[in-house]
Image (cartoon, rainbow, N blue to C red; front, side, top):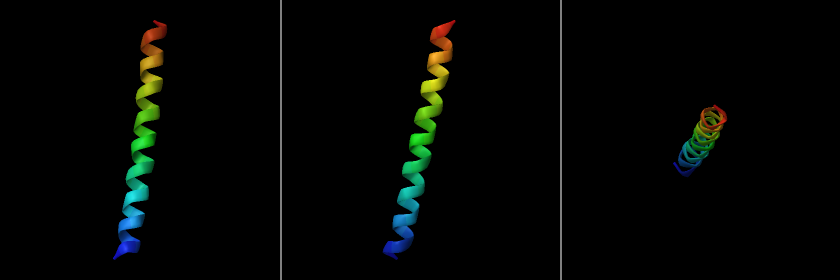
Length: 33
């Protein structure tokens, strides 16, 4: 059970960082204009 939870947590963290990176790149593009 803990194994599954660890995998889910890691996936959540990865997706969170990925989304954050995406948002930051969008913001930088907008600010460049």
